[in-house]
Image (cartoon, rainbow, N blue to C red):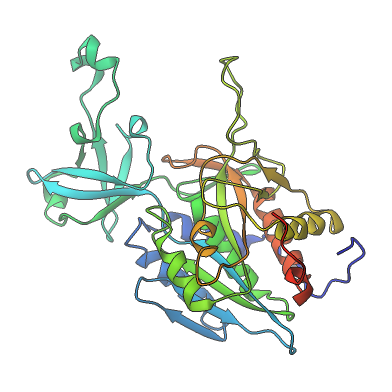
Length: 366
């Protein structure tokens, strides 16, 4: 591949008022792992007139296909997970207090005092903990265990909650200058991007869009979706932590992530679950260079995406991940940039327009 490439895709999708309005709906929706129904309904409504084929599988994945044209189309799977980290009610103590467990990776230290929304009716509550006035010096030195916290809903509302109900953080979507603040940017960014790519799918590929479930608890939906689609290659579209805050401790070196806000989509070269096909890394890098789209290489380290499950399905599927960077991942509120979202969409759209059978025809090295 060279940088002098004819664009085969249609008009480049952009982020405008309608995309932001949809993204607000997606971010404010509740979709804790295993209960993604509210997000799924939004997705199905958005793509019902776009995709050539739509299925909801047994796990709850939305599998949408938009066929291209021609005899040598490559089957490209894009995956974005609909679920988010959150909480599950496990025990009712009285009419207002409920014991809960975490669903997905959550730092327990940031939970006390957070407002939450419980159940599909999004009932308002708060995570209660002993106030500082009543704690001992020993207690103040240790983090509060989840087992010692309760969600307080009040006596009248509490009658409508039962064990198994999910709870999500009550943070509402907001645009703040060039930034977005919301809960569940991981991975409503990916969901919104897949919807736009379905709307602007280039004709040289069959676009296989998997809106997956239960990523935060073990990449479960992606494995099933990849088996059903059996694609030629796959891209997981996600959000990754931006580790770009000042270091107050000189010994606190960044040896896990080097992704930063304002530097474009993060292309993975390795994470805990996947070592991407180098041909796909080159494909995305050359696309960014050819179309003057900023991008960054995500430093090898921890974390993982749906690609971690996809690449191990059937005989092996060449896979890679591309993520929108965001600060404060897996907390009650994350911050990201509108431009990073827009550039991730542009990079993927341009890259899809360049896919040919020759992309993976050569021998894999590494």
